[in-house]
Length: 252
Image 1: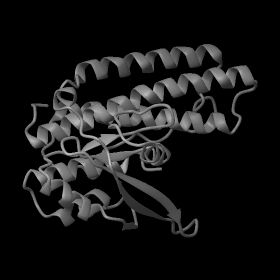
Image 2 (image 1 turned 90 degrees about the horizontal axis):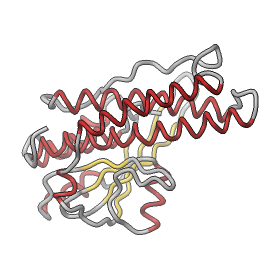
Image 3 (image 1 turned 90 degrees about the vertical axis):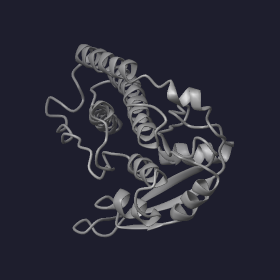
Image 4 (image 1 turned 30 degrees about the horizontal axis):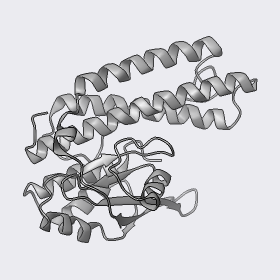
């Protein structure tokens, strides 16, 4: 799993291209460099279409079953595909959705990652709704969620990636982003990506039966899922504020 969702990179590099920087091929090369081995699907073609219709920004969504996490309105099939992928990039002004399907391949000693992009229809998002994203509120909610999760996990028997049950995931970083991004949303994005990685690591440990009893496992799982929701909301919010800043919609 990529610590930083690929759609974060695509949203920001695509927005930068829409703002007049570079060529559309740069979106693919810069956003996928060091992350995937091969790529297929109509990424460039879809971005050109969005530009033709007047799009100026590309946004991020991190949907999961039952948790839309920034998704625009779309049909059931498109929503299901995006939720299965766990991420999507979309055109907020003109509508439209790009969903990546990531497939590992190759032997253990020489792994690769294939991404196949698929385009779907989606409705535009009202601009005033997008512009109302509040970084301070997202940061506060993330901090409160981390504190609450830490206390609750310690109460029921320890944090799943501690105590010898598993090693903590490495410190998250933000590779492959465009230069010159506003520091405040980048800082929130960095923290949120790290918390997301920790929550996903803990859920993976729980799925392998780390807890000594079913009750402890159920509490841990519910706590980590709640933490994941807040972390991904912060990733989405910070990314979309950065996209709006690049596009000139609002200051970051």
